[in-house]
Image 1 (cartoon, rainbow, N blue to C red):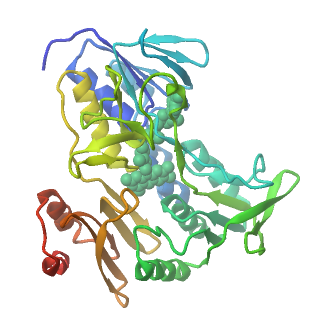
Image 2 (image 1 turned 120 degrees about the vertical axis):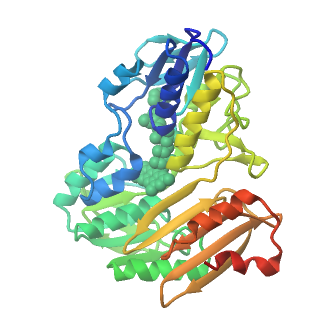
Image 3 (image 1 turned 90 degrees about the horizontal axis):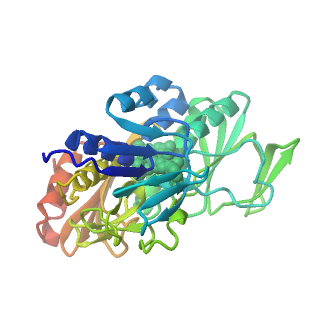
Amino acid sequence: MAASTGKRFVIIGNGASGTYAAETIRKNLPDSDVTLITNEPYPLYNRVALPPYLRGTAKREKVFLRTPEQHAEKGIKLLLETQIERIDVRGKVAHSADGRELPYDQMLIATGGRPNALAVPGAAGTLGVLNFQYFADAEAIRERMETSKHATVVGGSYIAYELAEAFRHHNLEVTWLIRGPRFLRRVLDEAGGRLVDQIARDAGVDIRYGHEVKEVHARDGQVVGVTTTADQHIDTDLVGVGLGVKMNTEFLADTGITVRGGIVTNEFLETAVPGVLAAGDVAEFFDVAIGLHNQMGTWNNSVGHGRIAGATMSGDRKAYNDTPMYSTGLFDSRIRVMGLTPENLSDLESYQEIDEEKRNYRRLFFRDGRLVGGCLIGDIKLQTKIIQVIQARQVIPDSERASILQS
Ligand SMILES: Cc1cc2nc3c(=O)[nH]c(=O)nc-3n(C[C@H](O)[C@H](O)[C@H](O)COP(=O)(O)OP(=O)(O)OC[C@H]3O[C@@H](n4cnc5c(N)ncnc54)[C@H](O)[C@@H]3O)c2cc1C
């Protein structure tokens, strides 16, 4: 690696992508000046470990991945509780809300997304209506669960599922409201949706599809119930909200950095503004595996982006080329989602098989005849093979699609 340049690197966001980028830069350029900034009060913690922490199966020590002392040992200046509110890309300075100026030679934006609030009458400011994104959210939900008997979950994706599972784990009665026709409605077909429905019902969850919360009811500031869009009333002590995220990009206004669904980058994670890169959930990066821009919300994608961005920033320019995977439990089953799915890109072809008795579900996604993604529920042994076939990027005739699912 080249000798140190003494350059100043400012990294906004200390999640997986920001932290791994900072460490890669300091490793490659030991004399560089690296500042890692977050508006949260903590060093890196593992968001993937938040659901087990909520269930009580992971301890706090397992959730936190870094300490301020470890950052200091690595020569990374960690600024906690510091909100960046403006970037001057001409003067190359990041401005914090408390008036600090942070000059940089290169900057990485790794700010991820923040959860959408439940935007219905009665929800704002009502105690017990909680999102699930940050460590602080997990603490608040844990505390609330102690005094709750019934919980309502809102949303049709992973976060909503993790909440439903944690609430059942603590023996709360659970009603799960899903606006669409099934869980992960774009990734699963009807049969896959029915399988998850059965798995969740067997775990004791009352699922209602086509329902949203219309109004939240409170007494003395505390949630006591919700009315759904089907005019059903549910008495509840806790509302867990999993309604997607909004990317943290507002502070980039007037910078010339292109923002669509996320911050647009090339395959090296460089934005249109020289010296500014983006990584992790917030990056809408050029994905060489599919020849299109893409955006992911997975832990291993964020770690990979962080390492690649850090390498590129320290002079070892590398393209990102990986197959992301989202893996989590599913009550007493498991789910793996690999590569591209219709969540990322519409118009993918699919091939699926289900074994209802064994509760195994497999779905493959194809684009231009190549395997680009897949989903497994239950038996997940095929995950390695599926990833290998995705990475081989060979055209697979229709007649041979089923053979991918043979172990
Ligand atoms: C509860 C939960 C469970 C999950 N489970 C899984 C799983 O099982 N598998 C999986 O693959 N993925 C999972 N994910 C997703 C995964 O955790 C994320 O994709 C990944 O953590 C994103 O990392 P990141 O570095 O891009 O951003 P983030 O981790 O979101 O970090 C961004 C940081 O930047 C800060 N920030 C934002 N704006 C500013 C600003 N203007 N100034 C200063 N700081 C700012 C944010 O507060 C945050 O601390 C889960 C996520 C959650 C919330």
